[in-house]
Image 1 (cartoon, helix red, strand yellow):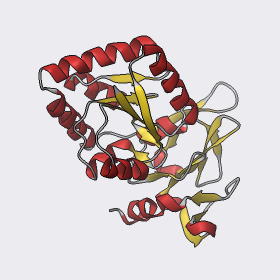
Image 2 (cartoon, helix red, strand yellow; image 1 turned 180 degrees about the horizontal axis):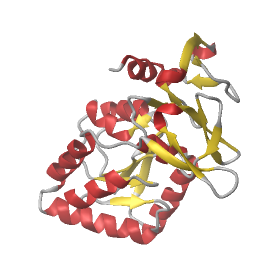
Image 3 (cartoon, one colour; image 1 turned 30 degrees about the horizontal axis):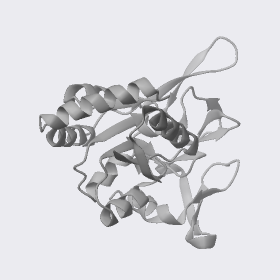
Image 4 (spheres, helix red, strand yellow; image 1 turned 90 degrees about the horizontal axis):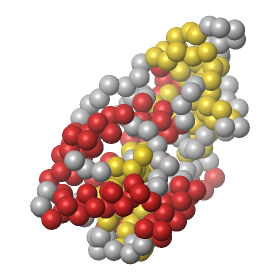
Amino acid sequence: MKALLIEDEMLAARHLVSVLNEVGNIEVIDILDSIKSSVAWFENHPLPDLVFMDIHIADGSAFKIFDHVNITCPIIFTTAYDEYAIKAFKVNSIDYLLKPITKESVEKAIVKLKTLSATNNIKSDIQQLIDSLKQEKSYKTHFLVSVKGDKMIPLLACDIAYIYIDSGIVIAKAFDGKSCNLDFTLDELAGKLNPNDFFRANRQFIISKNSIQEVDFWFNNRLSINLKVAIPEKILISRTRVTEFREWFDGK
């Protein structure tokens, strides 16, 4: 069985390859880390026997891949945490793997997919899943964050200028200059915040549309994002994601 991996975290990809080697009879033919590279791959290669697809990858939701190419082979989705996706998987009988992925979970998923394939339900179930996840869903509008002492205070999503990670700690910076720690990873927040308002600029930053003051052209066709509030380091948009950033900002 030939499998394609779509995963932007190299450690997670290596772990999954190791697990698949333990399972046996699965050959990983390529590892892709973005929407753009995945679309290009499917446009130029025959479909694999199986795809392992992380829901949140470097340049956005992996479900955007389906807007560009038609994938009819079996897919096993992977996620660190996504409440809405997990509900959809259960409803539509499509399997998912919750990280950290184990040999046993892969084996069970493959057995389930083979059963679905044998009854010719796999294509329709995948499409139902994609359609359900594309429907508008509820996003977090506020957080309860801890402050010094024994208090917790509300933080409105609309008050957040940007979120960044520093030494493993995820920090939200408000427009008023105040900072607070969030008990989520950036991957989790990318799925919880409204994508019309927030953009995953890179591995370190999620930025609010309302916080952008100006955009500069940078070396190697990248963009440098200047915000209305102070930032701990320069925020750069890679060359491969410039179009996506512009479409996000323009509301396309």
